[in-house]
Structure formats: structure tokens, C-alpha cells
Image (cartoon, rainbow, N blue to C red; front, top):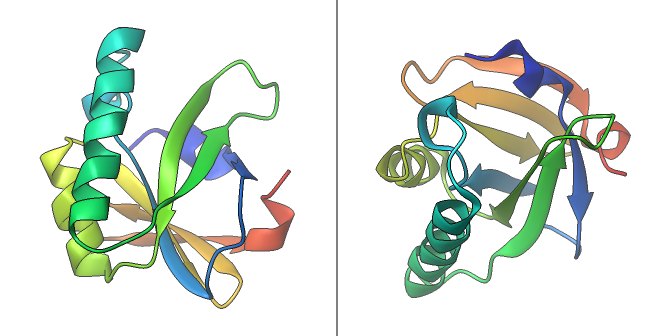
Amino acid sequence: MNPAYLETIFEVEEALPNHFVIITAYNPKGMSAPMSRNVHQDATLKSVLTQRGHDPVRVTGRNHENTHREPGWGVPLSLEEAITIANIFRQEAIYEVINGQIQLIDCKTQDAQAMGEWSERVV
């Protein structure tokens, strides 16, 4: 898994609950994809989440320099359901936030890496 994922900071458009995950559909398998494909996959992901009864909140992950950005969705899902959805969109990892603590979850192994306080990752 790309170590840059551990450096991600987030822009959030609305308040989120105490437990949520962040899933993106951009750049499947960690490979750059054309913007048109990313935008289409993002809309499809939002539709899937909405059809499952959720109201996803836009969360954009980015690097500190703001040279790489990936819009995603914050949504209160179980880890199992989140990984299932992320795998459909061929994602390498998702983020899970529980009671103010964020962790990076590998979608293949489900290994978790603690990343500290969520509030310190929000810009």
C-alpha cells in the first residue's frame, strides 16, 4: 500500500458522526485514471451509497502540498460493508474514523494503521 496514504489530510463539507468511513472511487488500484472516469466512478459510488440508504458527505483527501486530491465520501458504514464497497471500486484502502481517531484500512488484508486524531487531519 502506498505510504502516502498515511500522510493524507482531509477537507470536509459537513459534520460527520462519531463513526464513519471514507471511501473514494478515484484511481482504482492506486493507478491514475482519466478525470472523466474518476468523475463517473465517483457519481456511481455516491449512487450506490444512497441506494443503500445513506446520505454521504463529501470528504476530499489530499496531500499537504495540495498537488494531489481525491474526492470521496464519508458515510457511517460497518467496516465489512465499507470494504465490500471499496473492493467493488477496486480501492486499495479506506479510512475509518471512530470516536475522533482515524485509521487506514488495507482493503485486501483489513490491516489497520493508526493515524492519530481526526481533528488534526482536517483542514
